[in-house]
Length: 319
Ligand code: AVJ
Image 1 (cartoon, rainbow, N blue to C red):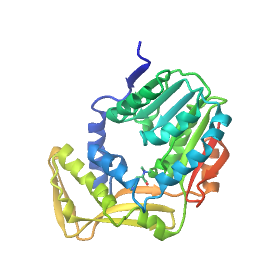
Image 2 (cartoon, rainbow, N blue to C red):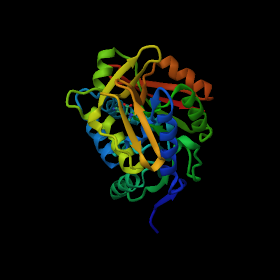
Image 3 (cartoon, rainbow, N blue to C red):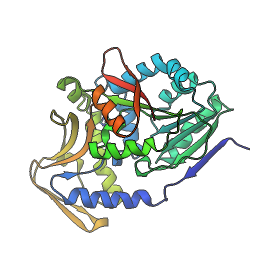
C-alpha cells in the first residue's frame, strides 16, 4: 500500500464560487480591493517563485537562514512526529525541517492547490520512502480538521503569509490554529518584521518589475476566470508603506478613467483616473505584537529567532 494519500475537503467548485463572491464584493465597494489569494494561478505562482530570488526580496532568504540555524533546536524542542504545513511554501524550506526531524512519521501538507501538493509529495517520497505523506486539499482560512496523526504535532505556517490577513482576520485564524493543537504540540510561525520604509518598499517594488507583473497577474486571472476585459497596461503597480498599520499595501492604479466589463458577473466596473484597487496587505510585525496576538489565541510564545540582520522572525509557541 502506498503511504501517500490525498484528501480533498474543498468542494471542487468552491474556488470558482469564492472568486465570484470576492470580486462582486471587492470591486463593488469604495475603496476597491481584492484578496491576495487570487494572485496564485500557475503563472502567478511562478512569478512568486521568481520574487523569492530577487535581490530586494529578503524574506525568503532570511527565513531560510533562520530555519537552517535553528532546525536542530526546533527538532529537539518539539520532538515532532507529525509535521503539518499550511500553504505550499517552497519545498526547499520544508526539506530543511524534514531533514532535522529523523523521527518524523507523517508529513501533512495543506494547500488549496492539488498540483502544488502532489509535486511536493512526489519529490519528498523519493527521498524519504518511509514517510507517510497525507496531503490535504483544503482552504485553511476556512476552518480545518486534521486527520488523526501521531503526536506531537508541529504546525508550520511559514513565509510571512499571516501578514496577508487583516488584524481581525488574524485573531480568528490564530484561534482556529490553536484549536488544532493538543498539549505537547507546537506552532512554528514565520513573520516579517517592521524595518525601514525604503527596504520594505523596495521588496514590493523591485527594479526588474517582477512584483509589478505579479500584481497585475490578478487582472489576467479575472480576465480568464470571469471573462473580464482588463488591460493590465491600463494600471500602474503601487507599493506603499502604511506606517499607522505597519503594513505594506500593493495596489493597482488606473492610469486613466476607464470601465471594465466582467461578463461572467454581468458587471461593468468604472475606475476614475488615479483610482486604486488594493490587491494585498502584507503586515510587518514586532515581537511584542506577535506575543500578544498569540496570547489572545491562548498560545504562549516560547522561542523567537531572527536572522542575523533582524529582518524576519520565526517563533515557536505552545498551547
Ligand atoms: C507570500 C504573502 C508572504 O507578502 O511578502 C510577495 C507575497 N507579495 N511580493 C508577501 C508577496 C508581493 C508574500 N507572501
